[in-house]
Length: 252
Ligand code: 1GP
View 1 (cartoon, rainbow, N blue to C red):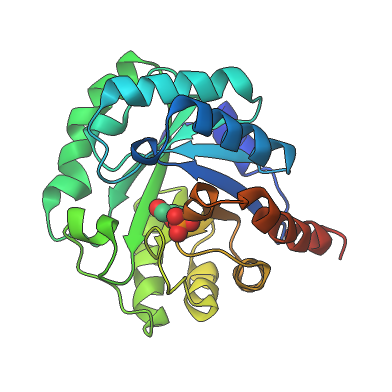
View 2: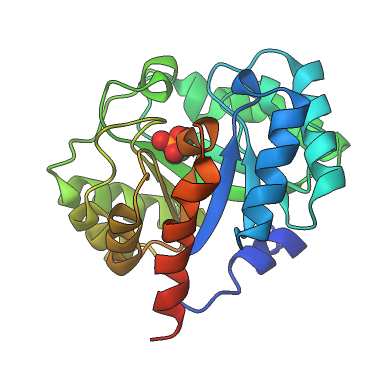
């Protein structure tokens, strides 16, 4: 098994129960200026890292531009969150080297990874081995990834996959409700997964309020990912209560 790199060590160094935040920038929805502004703002608000990626990304030159621009403007880790082989950039600090475990197409489970591995190695990117589980069937991620969705109402099924991910050596697991989802991950699912998965538990999709963030943190998520909200007007104002609720939890 690969050794823990610098970025993964940083991400996993929080105490259990101290939930962090990742800002997700989808290059399909940002030009350089906007991406820089979001990255700077979120870092100032105390976000732990920036994820860059998206499920429909095709323009690697644009990805490189965004990643290098963001990298020049923040000190926190800039981590790739690829939906395909087109999501790799030499300018990032690390990559969530993920397998979409509940895809029906082997391409998204291991095919893209095999092709992408060459580039990851050539660019000397830190690879963080991650299982990716998609819930619900209305998101772009679910459609593009040809997912056989895990029902939101079946925490035991999610926990089963989580345990399998752990036995396969994945040190991170991402529970995905889909970008812009009206149905964020139910805390019961996160709780069930937390019981069987010991690694870094990442949760994203539809996190837009401090209440949702707090319930997922209480359920045991290590890192919450916020993307869509960053693309809305007055996003900073909306983020402040979310960062506050998580910060307040650190005190207890
Ligand atoms: C999507 O989980 C991420 O891959 C973030 O979701 O865009 O809904 O915040 P949102």
